[in-house]
Image 1: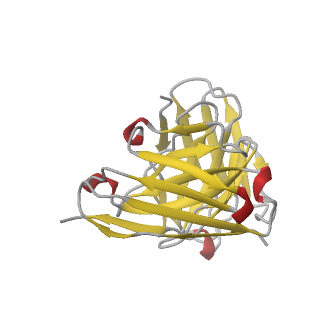
Image 2 (image 1 turned 135 degrees about the vertical axis):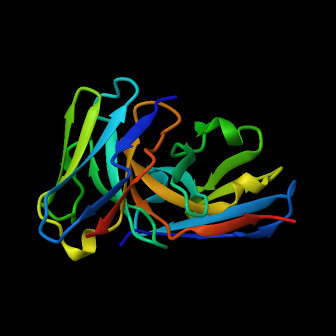
Image 3 (image 1 turned 60 degrees about the vertical axis):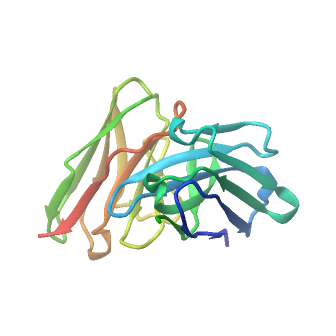
Length: 117
Length: 107
């Protein structure tokens, strides 16, 4: 059974940093692109970024470019989202997703990030 | 960026009804569009990919189609568990944008 489990969310002050992790199991992690999306409270889904199987190709939505960095450790079946210079509008539930060609086919349960003083 | 506009934003229907949700893309995106379902407090769930291919395990009452830049999700006979919010998302070009969502409520 494919499972994705995010962790690392919490309360952080504006301008602060947080590192999210997502551990995958039940599939060959190194065979898949991995992605992140977020959902602000009461709002819709927003795509954040994705990366290819070995981490050599990464894409971000413009709003997080230069502030967020994706990485992965295939030996640990884990993908990371390093978030710096956090703003109030980054407050959201962050989901990781496994990608197969042209789709996100499995999603984690999400981790809440709250940016507030 | 490619914009996806869903209609309607809210839909009230009854168990057994046939419902249709539309997603219009701002430019041609071929068939690289998916539909997902999200229930309150839960992760999204993939329903349809490549515009019309049913994800494994998804009931056959769900179907998708495309006409030009307009994509449609149809639920042939609503079941109680189908009341949720539905999103379209494109994988044609970056960023992989979502539609704004359609909330399907019980009438």
